[in-house]
Image 1 (spheres, rainbow, N blue to C red):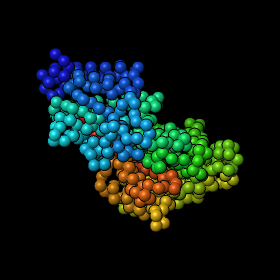
Image 2 (cartoon, rainbow, N blue to C red):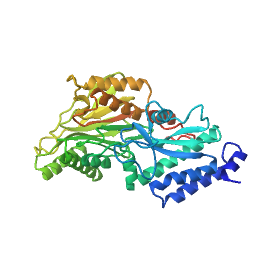
Image 3 (cartoon, rainbow, N blue to C red):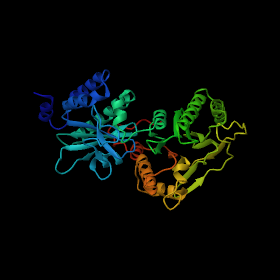
Image 4 (spheres, rainbow, N blue to C red):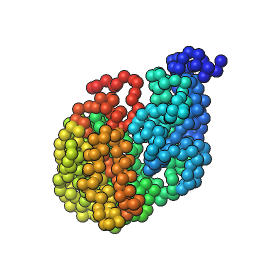
Length: 431
């Protein structure tokens, strides 16, 4: 009797032993597998619990389409066979909202399952299942969670992945930036961080960064001068110096000075970067930041925006050695903190009208009321921004958004905010 028949004989839910065997076999085989081998491995082992015809679909860089993970993707700029639009499809809705959805009335046993690494959206799984009971749905969700971990562990060494998620050729500078930055979304029970960046294939001087250290969340955004490879090198050096300073235990003022020194030493004052570096004390909501000639941070509070005031230092790389001031403010529960580059607010449409802070904030406020996951709100923001400028951006546009709840989220609240499928495991214990 095959594994699939044994599952059918015992009902739609797989026995615990078969479930354990599936996950154990996947983990064991993954140690010596490439990314290209993962789809066949997953399809084979999922049959142990009655999940058939499993296909892995990954979102492209701009999160417009979902493409099947295959060994030889189409060349950059060509449509992938079998790709699915994120807008207007069931698979796309599963990706956008983080929900397991039935494919259609014609395929009642086929499901689309969000593929999420932590809270970072990767794509979806297509799964055919014998039933839709709670245990089978949990099997699909857990399988998707393991597949996401496998994809993320294999993609740094896979040129196939890099080609699959691109829809056109990428500049060398953009290649540097995407390799440098952390994943686009991360969340804990006390914080949600999400970011977007455009133009995805030609970005040259914008970068964002974040990291966690105990009770602190470190945040940064930089906008290097120029639109060439040198701008990418400038931004790369700024972020790397910042990280080195954090690892050495330096405060924000010392880090800002070191970034200025590093850029001045490398480029002799001919290249600079504006930026904001910040530290948020997560339990208390106290925000400290240093502004290096950049747009100040903005807080979206209820239905209004607050531009944070503080004395800016010169852009990093000018070598002026002027005073650097560390500024402070107190967040309120539910605040959204925005760090952004001028490509968002100052870009103009054909009539010469700027996108502006009012449009920027209004979009976020309206979509917050729609209760969309934070990364989906930013995905829609950047597509709205591109539409406003008829997809002809003259400058990089980057947003780093931080949502601070004050009191910890419940597990379901955190899942809803980030588009993670509703879990079945017990919530983590509170400290």
